[in-house]
Image (cartoon, rainbow, N blue to C red; front, side, top):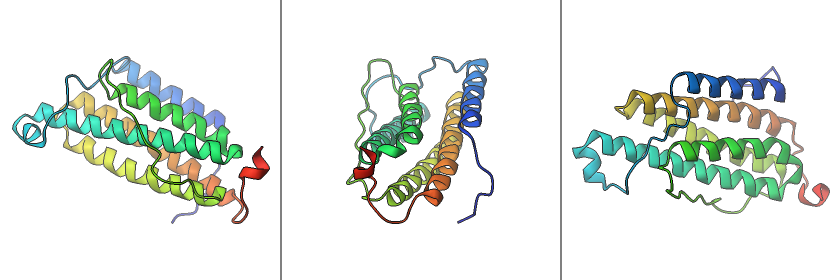
Length: 184
């Protein structure tokens, strides 16, 4: 795994997030929702490319919801990580809203126990964010809609930034000891 030699300040992360939001708004993606209608079957996705796009958007939304829930669960377990993890969970929630139809519900699940140490929890989150980024990049190359591809690529970029922040935090976290007792 590469060693990151530069630090990314919260100010730079916030500025980058705002820049992505402004770029999305300028590209006409502000308030955009990519999903409409109900669930599609796998054979429908093969017969209708738009159905495949919708299935990819739903899958990404479900992954984002799961990540948001996992980040929140980790933040509750390791309170000192809250200032890092809560903004990430909020960004995932925003992507869930972007990739689901109005009124549709996408519920996430945290997926198992949160590791006892902060370092292990951060590594677990890093692994999950990397898997989600890989899936989002693959979906961006698969979909037929240019707008959806751009939104998926934007989400993959967001995940990549999360990876950098989580990697740095994991490198700085103590290897031993539970953070729960120290956090409250």
